[in-house]
Image (cartoon, rainbow, N blue to C red; front, side, top):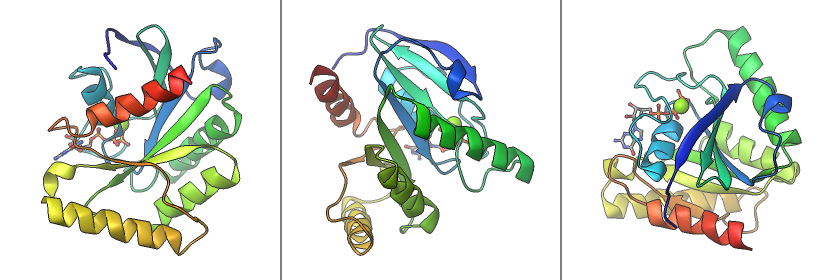
Length: 198
Ligand code: GTP
Ligand code: MG
C-alpha cells in the first residue's frame, strides 16, 4: 500500500474525545521506549510526525494520525518503565485501558516488543488481557537491526514457545521490524491494507 498522506489530527486522554467518524484504526502499544512512535514515522515516511525520544515516557497522550484520508494510525503512551510518577502511570493505564475497551473503530492493536528481550510478563499479560477483552492484536518485534538473522529467529521461536505454553493455541500474527532500517514496512502496511479491503 502506498501512503499518500499522513496528518496529525488530535491528541487527548479521553477515548470519548477521539475522532467520532468511523474510519478504521490501528493502535501501537507496548513498553515505553520500544519504538512505537518511531515505527509510525517509518510507516508514514515522516521523520517527526510522531514525537520520539531516547528517554522512555515521551508519548503521553492518545494521538490520532489520519492516513490517506481513510484510516488512522494511533500512537499511545507506553506501559512499563517510563520515568513518570506513579500517579501519572496510573492515569496512563486508565485511559489506555478505556481506549482498548471502548474504541469501536479499533480494528487491530499492534503490541510492540523489543526483539532483544525475552518474553516479559508485562507484555504477555497485556496480550492475555487484550485476548480476554476480544481485541484482535498482532505482535510487532522492533529494533531488528540490533540482532543478526540467526538471533532474530531464536528470539521469535522463544517467544512462540512461551506464548504457546500459556493460553494461546497458536502464535498471533507477527512482524519483524526495524524503524531505523525500514524493515517490515511492506508487510505491516500490506496487512493493514488487506484488512481495510475486507
Ligand atoms: P514512549 O513514547 O516513551 O513510550 O516510547 P516509544 O515506544 O514511542 O519509542 P520511540 O519511538 O520514542 O523510540 C525510543 C528509542 O528507541 C529512540 O531512541 C529511538 O531512536 C529508538 N528506536 C526506535 N526504533 C528503533 C529501531 O528500529 N532500531 C533502533 N536501533 N532504535 C530504535
Ligand atoms: Mg512514543
